[in-house]
Image 1 (tube, helix red, strand yellow):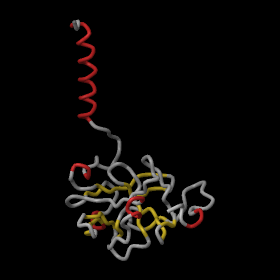
Image 2: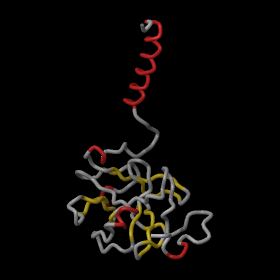
Image 3: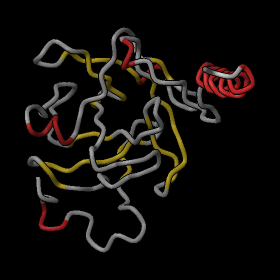
Image 4: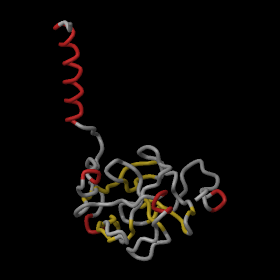
Length: 174
């Protein structure tokens, strides 16, 4: 038999968890993610070890690929597995500090819409495990280099602090 005294603390724990989930995370200038639910992606600047660079709505670093030609992505298959494209369902949003005139989309060969910024298709890097990671900066993989972007839409050319050689073996194992 369940005692009523024990149900009240359990109910309070469940209620607290539900209220916390409803409030969501916070403290970031970039809006919460919508791409997983079929909504538009959000891109905006955040401070990292490289300075202020563009991130997605999860505060994950986004990169440009020097192998792309204009707004056409040259990254698919194994490349897109390691460097997933930033996709959007609808017009992407812009965070505070980024330029609305620079954001757009391009259609990928599979029909999905990839977010672009200043004409560069955007990607994440699977080796970036938490917000602020920039482990893909200046790497050479899949035939070209990868760089973060500034809010002005330009590649950030500096390697992350503390990296003696930003592209070991020229390919970082990809």
